Image (cartoon, rainbow, N blue to C red; front, side, top):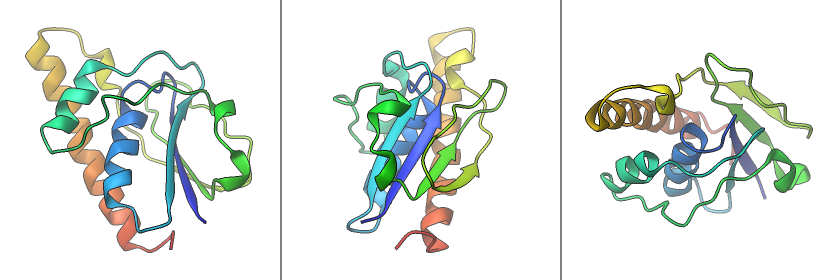
Amino acid sequence: MKGILFLCVANSARSQIAEGIARTLAPPGVRIWSAGSRPTSVRPEAVAVLKEIGIDISRYRSKAVDDIPANEVDVAITLCAEEECPVFPGKALRLHWSLPDPAAVVGTEEAALTAFRKTRDELVQHIKTFFSQKLVT
């Protein structure tokens, strides 16, 4: 069985959004995880913007990299931009998709949601492209 791990620092926004999207788009049998180097909690904005497209991550929780079965991960994708990305200790193909942290946006609730939507939409495109390249079968 193949596995994909999405990594960011807090495992609260980008990696959680990626996990939710990838679970809906992944071929059968592909396992999907997300984790962070300093996990906190899932951002309500991440839950909200995925709910807008019919994906429910309301029961997801933030996880540390050590919580993931490293021997089952074939691809580790880091999603950091301005911060230092977590290190994945396992043997896996490593990819990097540089995405700004939507949780760092300061301003109104609508400004935050706009940033989370942009991240969601970018991740949808990245993940669709990834699966269409058949790197994981």
